[in-house]
Length: 261
Image (cartoon, rainbow, N blue to C red; front, side, top):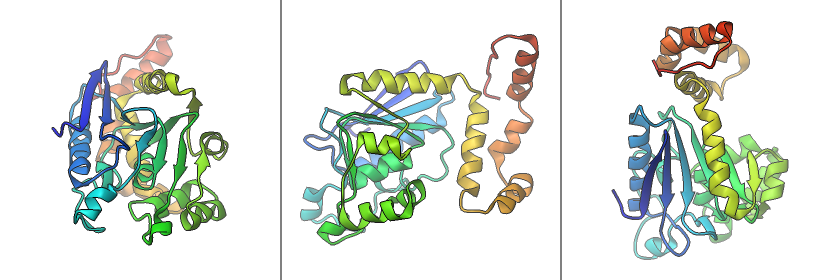
């Protein structure tokens, strides 16, 4: 594993920390290391939730490593099977990932956060896409994902001008799930992860797979794909032991014991 990506397991939670001083900028090697960390998390049945964060208090990630670019890393360099940051094009993953944004999420760093399923951030965090101000575009999902998460006019304002969005504004627009004081961020991310641990793991994976497979469809198409499409985790969930356990636990007035099968 790349020594700039730290991994820690904590009672079903996988902490993945990008540690590249001074700004947690991401080059091809870091992207591939992040992907390997996420792939290992996806494959480990003992791990239920991942928390992706940056080291330090100032930067979640400054995005594309411009020093690497100046040394010859191309704008269209191959960042590996997960795309930039190991996650922006990791479309086959089925387990939840929380972004714990500990500071500035800039350009590709913002795109990495947008590729996660949930976002909790420190109150001093800021989100922005400065790419057009340096002659490129946020093409690691920024254009696509931000325009789906925010009103079009607001998304275009950020994409075309590079304007910054503070944490409190991000919360108002529903871009993030929670804003906390900086020192409270790890505990808040862990609490969010523990909330996810209470739900059935296979059901969560099925819900994420359904969303990923159908979010570009209209409602009729989405229902048709759900009923007749090839969604292996959803099909597995319907016939699962956990589905039976959840019903039994509810009827018996007890907490369910999930087996993940």
